Length: 513
Ligand SMILES: *Cc1c(COP(=O)(O)O)cnc(C)c1O
Image 1 (cartoon, rainbow, N blue to C red):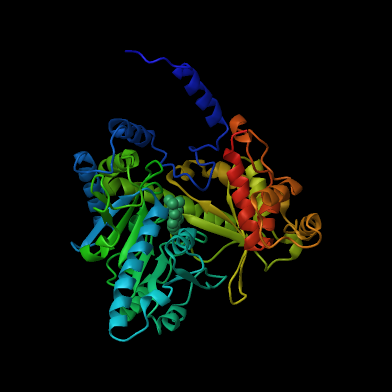
Image 2: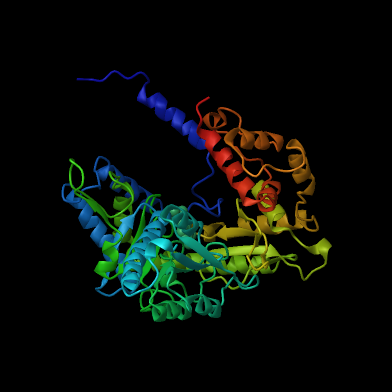
């Protein structure tokens, strides 16, 4: 039997090829965020073959598709070894860092409920009347904001020092003094915004003393830090007894295609709180280790093939290249007048801020710099400034994620970074006051406290950011060439306006014309 195709599959694929030409380049090191290029074509081929081999598999049920259990067990075994977990450490392969973080929070919330119920029986406050809290440095990944939102916890952000990017252990000690409603402490290795490692040894010990779970988010750095030159793993990984869970993304420095991360948990009983199981419906008995039901085994198979094939020595070599390139870029940037690297990053991420110690006309605004580097063909990531609850401010920065492919491109990249700085030195940061005034004008003086979809779209049109219908279809980018004004606006607007505006920007992209 041959099916009747309305469109020739070859033509459909040809169109996909055209669409892909509109994408940012995933290989070659020109995009210094989002993509993690090992620079090894063999690894990409290996991943593609592994994906092809499991393409029709449903990883929902590892008893029916037994290859899934074997691959997952071996990936967890690899991770447990490199993060120094003992035989009490068990784990799961998830769809990505966000899912690992969501599940770490869900687990901690379930354990907190069990504890709170026990305390209530002993005469304390009813658990149902309290909202459990997560304590984390302000630099904790947005995935924990999402987890708090999804699972009904309150995220309490601990300010970090603007110069070092680090929180103070004493602040955690103070917050843990009355820990009855603290369900989880989260620390990062390293934190994404500045690439610095939180004081995990000190704070995990404080959490342990208070009887509170402590998650290490190594989503970004997990698969480089074990081999990072000069770094002692005893300061951040599962060797620390207070660390109760750890996440690490296989689709970052595990070089796997998107869709794979590991969540390790200390203790079977803890980890079982991560699961969802029900016999309460007339269909098949459900046991889910992760958020999804039916799921692909593609990224798992690719990550499995890569970890098996590279082994720890392969990872060590790729990490050495990242470390050399990061050191070279740090030296280059510190040598550029008007810019400075924030704090002392450990690992392959650098955040670059303006150097306020030089005359204003010698300063380089990091967002103008990033826009100019983009004009030279290199995409840095713009990070907005941030105000803590205590009023202290983190500066706007440009973020660079360094991957193994970066080293081979260093001469060109260095030249572009230096030239871009020369071209924008002395140009002050974007002043959004006029734009804000014109936005307010569109609403009779003040921005509305709540924006529905059409009001948000109207605002996007007023500032020239409305995606035109079908923009995605032609492959044309939705955002302007210069992102500095856009980021300045995001930073200046209250979250209640900025968030629906950003939602609208993205949601309209996929509306059929
Ligand atoms: C990337 C990242 C995450 C979230 O991971 P996704 O894979 O994007 O879902 C969480 N934490 C840190 C530190 C990260 O870098």
